[in-house]
Amino acid sequence: MKQSYLRIRSACFLLFIFVGGLCLQAAEPVKKNTAENQAEVPEAKGEKQDQSDLVPLNKQKTVLLDLKHKKLYLKTHVCLVEGVLEMLCCKKQTKEHESILSIDSSAKAIHAGLLAMGAKAGTPVKFTPKFQPPTGQKLNLILEWNDKAGKVHREQAQKWIRSSTSRYFTAKLDQLPPGVVIDKKTELRYDDKYKELIWFGEMTKEERDQFLAKSDNKTYQAAIKKFYEKTRPRLMEADWVFAGSGFSIDEMTGEKYYHAESGDLICVANFPTAIIDVSIESSASGEGNLLFEANKVKIPPRGTPVTIEISIAKEKASKAKSAD
Image (tube, rainbow, N blue to C red):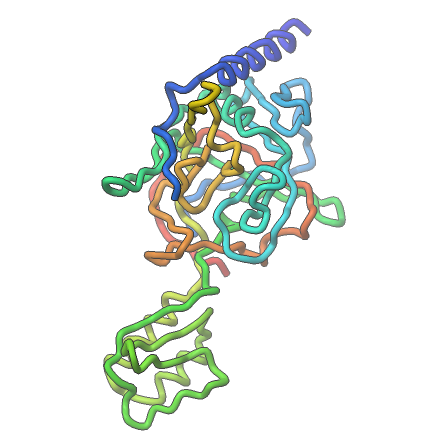
């Protein structure tokens, strides 16, 4: 009983400090603006988290701290199963149209929980004068949910996110090779003005072979092969880091505003407002082919309760893995 009381006091004290102005970790004011290396996730065996180890950090009891095991649990639900993403998890009623999960919680409660479990905040992404990726403690995120039959599932969060194929891909081509006629029923197009071959979406092996058979022109062949390779869906292989978001000060009232309260909790596209961000350069516009989308074959139905288990990650090597 005494230990439980001390845990609660410790967590509440941390939250109090944060709300009161823990801005030493903060960034400068915001300007407008798939992998084999992932750790193995233990199979769920039906055992439940000892509730006595969990300390709620908000009144909704959706942010739960386990000081003993240095873990943070976020109680979320699925709000999107298909579409282009900017984040894995957002605040309720903010960015559900571009986030797989949503949580009813303030952002500062999540930040306080990360600090309490021992994670160290770094710096959010910077775009000027030159790009600097976000830094901070590397985090391991595991998603846990029950299917309709009541079976418990646990997976690395990266498996729910893949490289986006729902976009246009281009390749320079001065002109179509003689004899090549593009069927308008396909997604292949040629832009005579900009001298580009254009493809939309994922190209199948059968489509690749059909297009390659139309001409042996080396530039044309290279373009088709490029489209096939670039449109292979791959699991996100980036690490998440505790970037820490930042603060702004209202010039009229002098009050501090925590940037992540806008909704940017766990991002897959870089935002200076993010609490947790990916450790690579990732653009919401898809520049550099780093646009991500929901891996719909992995995600349970909309509305499904999902617990995000956050812990400090171990260092690991990097290697790509197919999303199939």
